[in-house]
Image (tube, rainbow, N blue to C red; front, side, top):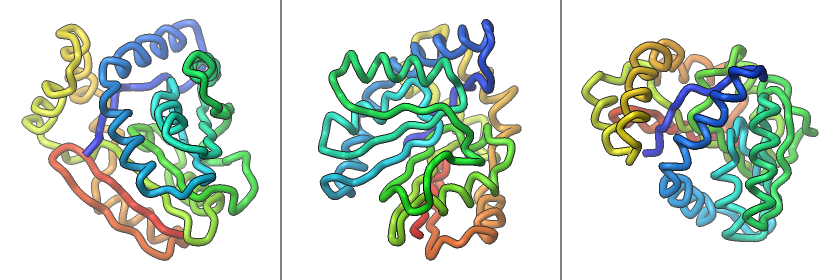
Length: 222
């Protein structure tokens, strides 16, 4: 289960721009995770599928997915720094991904626009989580699927240490990431039961929540 949850900048400022660059460098050390996730998702998509990633950060997943097929891929992030960064990385990789700036609680897309939606390691940062879930449902086409992958709020210290040690990070980034989990991320993250309560307010036709040692995968079908 892919559960990386390094803290992300919420707004653009000089400091947050620096954090965005650190985040991009740190997550780049884990590129295999993005490649594996892209391959997994590509195996579930039809050619030409419209895909949205909410809060893509530096855009690694979108770029890797674009390499695998003729999909119409969009990434939407609140951070202007990340949007600009991801666009440059996509151009360098020679792939076509449309990165836009916007809010997850007010997605700037018409209803029924996408076949698949991903939100990875970012949902816990959203100020209006139920509104975000409702927006995700709105922009999916009938039968479309959404996937949220994130840290669970009741993850144990042992699970966190084991997961971070296996991320392949440098010693410095491993220490910082463990500190971020303990001081910031668990406080923001949701448990399985909290997700179930929020999803009762959203009109998905089916929901499946898979719980691992550190994270959750919430699969939703409209």
